[in-house]
Length: 223
Image 1 (tube, rainbow, N blue to C red):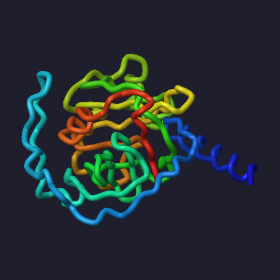
Image 2 (image 1 turned 90 degrees about the horizontal axis):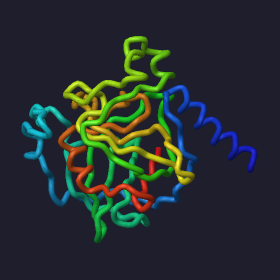
Image 3 (image 1 turned 90 degrees about the vertical axis):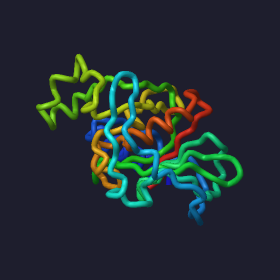
Image 4 (image 1 turned 180 degrees about the vertical axis):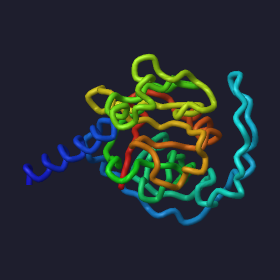
């Protein structure tokens, strides 16, 4: 059994390395109940936003599946408020609120072969971040190689979008996985990224405002 568990962990690490990311050790023990109803939906929160000198375009939210629109839902879990639960299969991210509720966001997840699971915490966060693609990604995509060292500066076309939250493992090591925005709103609900979790920019700004970096901000990713 120990051998089998070790091989599973190694397999996840190898998969993440191919993605240009590094995985956390599987686990978390989260007990999640299926959401039963929507208490409030924020369909009017996707207009054009002026932020730090940038103007984010409005999202044609009528073209987004309603389940991926930001909303407060009933949600029973053993995790405490402030925890982030990412359900990659559902394409939902839950920010746990008190009293059996959660703020739910639609997400885009890793392509097949780049998926990951485990536990981490938000070590730090950044507004309008600079993007540094991993060397492994540059090997697959020569068009991004020039950004490995100097990075791509913040802007409307930056793959990390308007905000990024950086996930570290329990040993304090950077997992290279991020929760971040994206200019590609139509990728929400799909498996399109190289392993990280992407949100509509208007949603990542909202989530960012709720998150306080530190080991208390636990992130649980489940398949």
